[in-house]
Amino acid sequence: MKFFVDTADIADIKDLASTGMLDGVTTNPSLIAKSGRNFIEVVSEICTIVEGPVSAEVTALDHATMLKEGHKLAQLAPNIAVKVPLTWDGLKTCKVLSDEGIMVNVTLCFSANQALLAAKAGATFISPFIGRLDDINLDGLELIEEIRTIYDNYGFDTEILAASIRTANHVKDVALIGADVATVPPAVLRGLIAHPLTDKGLEQFLADWQKTGQKIL
Ligand code: E4P
Image (cartoon, rainbow, N blue to C red; front, top):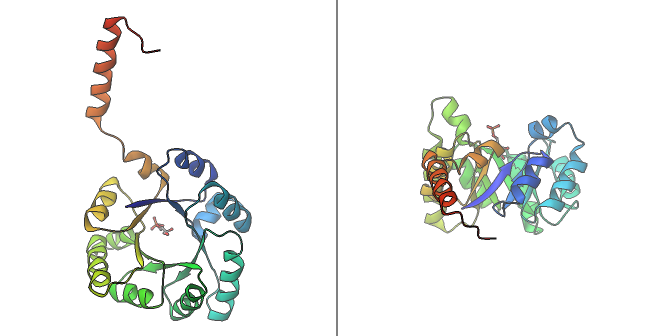
């Protein structure tokens, strides 16, 4: 499963990219607002840090303007994935852009039927928001399972990009289901490594090593 980081924070992106684990980045208008940076500038900078797909979201609601925005964003860098909302205008825009060879991430997916439409529109990625479903007592993981089954039934190559991830368990669960990508907030991504027995074991090994009085270098 690929890891994208869900942020527009340059320091976090650089730090996580240095681990070699980062396969891409997703942004959205809220994350851009949080960064306090100019949208075009910050997205262009992110594209120089990571080689993988960088999602940049259109903000128009009508197809014609969305398409113009999509073309502008796609010209920023070859690794831009234009993010469009799951509306009919968004899907029309997705179809045109994907026919032109531009990567498209269809976002704000909350149902399997929406995901089916996005795949038929040629989406590169579908972004089901699992945390926001869990927030209203629905089952985000069940949605990922349904989409996996539907895409496998028909051989769609749209990648399932599990989004709105809130916990390390979400990451494990979507990996078990077979999501292609998880986009994860920086803190949750860093937390994946945590285990108290790793810390305790390392402490013990170092204490015993010091007793030997040896050095490797
Ligand atoms: C995905 O692309 C979105 O940016 C993101 O995962 C939304 O997550 P949230 O529900 O935590 O805002």
